[in-house]
Image (cartoon, rainbow, N blue to C red; front, side):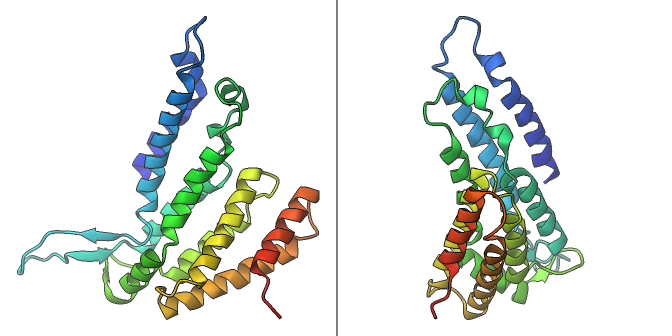
Length: 239
């Protein structure tokens, strides 16, 4: 996480100076979009490197007689630091990736969907049935590196739900992400490959998210109220 943090700090400097460093006076902006796309690709690689820590396993080659355990769960404390990093650098409206004056020089339809898709891909991978099933199995059956405990599926869903649903609905990027979270939960709840013990936690996360959306339906401006009403309707239980 620390190395990625340094990398992102440097990437933010590049983003701030992208036009200045790559487009000389009198040149067109034809290459700027390609360079911007490369910046997004680097950002995505950094983020995915950290996301892999969540639900991760340390693998060490070992022979019998060595004081080494070949497979150990990444400690919960390190996984939680990774989640905190993702909340700060991925979920929390990364406006530095979408400076209006820069984007307006190479795109006629903006880049909201491009940035949103990075968030959605990471969330989708973290919430795949196979990954959650593995995470549940790892917690139950693998030793933990160093001292401590593994992060369980319940802890992951609780942290993601808090981080995502507490984002400000004043921003379209955040509204998109919150709806994607809800859609992912709904898809998981209908996935017959999901372990029963994991399915119960997904149902709990849906209930908590629905309660949050219900409590926010009459708050904020008309756009925010419409957003939370929509979120609530997506999770509304049939009578």
